[in-house]
Amino acid sequence: MKTPEKVGDICKAMKEAAGDSAEISVKFRVGVDEEENLDFISRFLDMVSTKSSVTKYVLHARRAWLKGLSPKQNRTVPPLNYDLVYETVKKYPEFVFIGNGGVETTEGVVEKLEKLDGVMIGRKIMHDPWFLQVLDREIYGIDESLVPTEEQVMSRYLDYADMLQKTVGTKNTILAKPMFLIYKGNKGRFFRGQLGQLISKVSGKRYVAGGIDKGDSLWGAESEIHGHPLFSTLVNETLHLCNKQFEHIKARKETSAGITSIH
Ligand SMILES: Cc1cc2nc3c(=O)[nH]c(=O)nc-3n(C[C@H](O)[C@H](O)[C@H](O)COP(=O)(O)O)c2cc1C
Image (cartoon, rainbow, N blue to C red; front, side, top):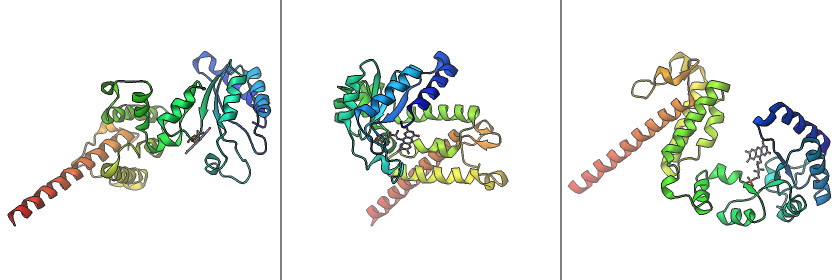
């Protein structure tokens, strides 16, 4: 934000390179260091929009302290300033504005959508990905039967992950991040532990030398790329192990219940 001219040049070059095939938007904050006001924002927006003709902006309601605060602290320490976000929106009715920062509830989304074109949610979705389904139901009124199940979401994500690995070679650790909180409770704990173990196992030499136990598993040649298992293979393997583990626990509980009743 301190160099709006440079941002404008970058956006212009991106637009020219992408043509009509990609929509370019710009994410920025209400302020940087000592500057947090409408004049500062206007200087940025006027320059970027004139140079690049970008019309879509994501505005994070917290300023950034470039010195003294880490990126993580910059997401919590500077206070939210939605008043300044709304002032900006009012001044630039010709642009599309998505508000961002600190939104964690349906009420928070609804309130902001009254004044903004959209809301971007970061950490809440990382910690609770199913919150998006709550919003689908509560804000967009999507019928329960049309909301995808856990299995459908997983299956679509794995198709996407396979495509990424086959085309750009995305790493398992990157693909696993959004998956780690998909299951809750005991299943979640087991799934996270097991998937983490499998990923570290295949990333080391042990996979090449001996391989994971392929005996009682879903392993197959189709599930590999360049001799390494695809992410979807690891997840399916993990789910298979989860199911086995839960069947085992259930059987143990049933057995001990049986013994208790004999005594
Ligand atoms: C792990 C993590 C990585 C992030 N990486 C980026 C990034 O690369 N670029 C960016 O503009 N914002 C990044 N952010 C900031 C978020 O996009 C968002 O602005 C911020 O988390 C505030 O929104 P929230 O309160 O809904 O989380 C990141 C946030 C987190 C938690």
